[in-house]
Image (cartoon, rainbow, N blue to C red):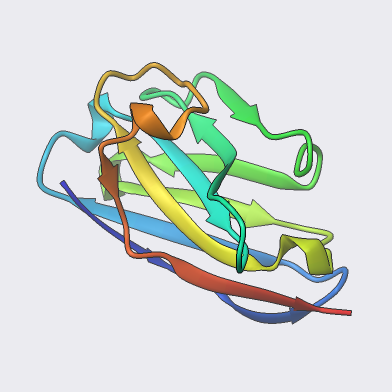
Length: 123
């Protein structure tokens, strides 16, 4: 499975961005998909995940109520809508695929990773 994330950029605090991640190869519609982020000098952390059908979503407390994960299985794409962005949201954002569809937040559940897209939020 190859994953390509896009949509990052520079935005002012309070602004919005929508990230996209398109998959090729594998069976996208059967995978749970997750978004993670890694700030400079820090470990990669869970942001959000969505089950294969889109029927369940889970969020890190830091983004709950501001970010929304969704997917379009017909387009092999998962999205992350990010609203009310804060400077602490600045990071490289990665999408990842979980073929076992656990919907878990642990990095170890996701064997497939995209290359990441930079999100920078200015104050």
